[in-house]
Length: 573
Image 1 (tube, one colour):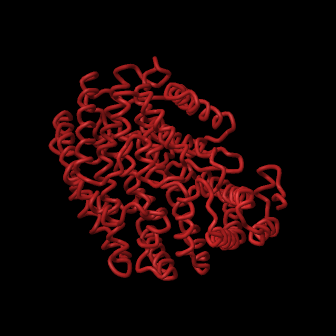
Image 2: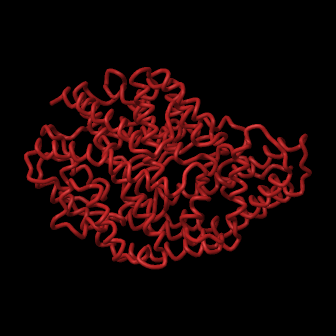
Image 3: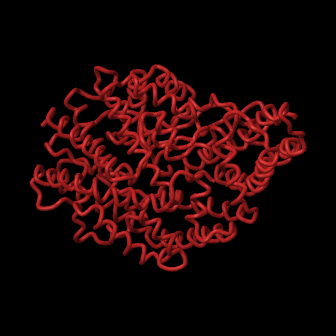
């Protein structure tokens, strides 16, 4: 097969469908037998890598600057001119490989995934996916443009999160009300977007012959190892095992702060009255100290991170007209990942750096696999991809002190660990709200699920159920519109339970690391290198964890987190 005509990233991004199509056509016509199948898979991998890298680099360009019209035009051109043709071309090759009946080492699980992709593929959905992507970009623009005037300066909503760490409660209240008020200004626009998202997704499910978008998404995400009912079992387990633990810690926080009740803006301040943790004063310092931590966890991980820094594959400072959130994304031709974040100088930024770097290390480790469908984003079970990221957060905990190359004094490192544990254990109930909301919405997609007012009501009920420790009196509009502020709900539906399941795996890895750090890191790395070549439970097992949903496993992990929380709290209080 003649290679695609590019020798640089610039040339790759200028390829048109006329440049790419001959490669797909040659692969489709090629004879497949036991002697030719492995070279054929490698050639297919080269083409798929190129198309994915084109998409990913263009996506990055739109998110690092949501006001970049040229980037938006190039991304839209790809989605309109290449994606609708590359997707069916990929599907033809999947069908060809499936029908060949040929066995290739390491391809058993990828073949299983291809069969399901073939089952749900409909060419008429391609235009809907493009429409969905454009709508998602519009959502990014809304978030990216959200700024307020604070202390005489234009400040992004993300930057206002620094204010939530201030000791002066009145400053916290004013800052939070300002940022929440700005977000509420977009309420009706997001409501209209939501209706469009829901209608689009129901059409996608209808075209695939499935009763709801949830069933479509379950197949699209290759969720062979658990069902929607297991997600609900997980929600129940969180209510039983985690909500009481969080409630106890929250009550202690209320007493330590001397408050009658906890408001949302009371959840992030240090209870001792110490000033907020200030882990770094510049992005360069954040990168340098993160590198030091990764070298301590494993020298190879430190080298990976240094490569990203050296090759300008980190964009981690917050600014106006930058999409919200954080992600790691792969450039498979270059065999390098890219990390995107929104750092503003708080400890949460350190955790984000650790988290997204875990994803990046997963990419580096799985790039050793020969075939695209062993390690592409669609091949990696997201439930384990998030173990890679969350596991790194815990494996890095011993090295937060400056004496270990990290950010803090011994006392501040203890504070940082307490903050991380507090945020992590509180996450499970919040995750359950997000997950339960989405199940409800797509179970009622033709009625209440696409009615923004009903969505507000449902979110309010779930808040009371899973986060009863937050006093929302007087802030009811902010409370019930929480679903608007979680971009996964709008842009990545049903991609959230993964975080909860992964945290359960990550805490189990942490438990092993507390006993034997080197062994825990070694097993974690082994699991990363497997990519998507084995089933999800086996990935967890290789990493030293159990894939589970039950209250018992959750209880054991919650108990460990509370125990460690109290241990570190004693260091600085």
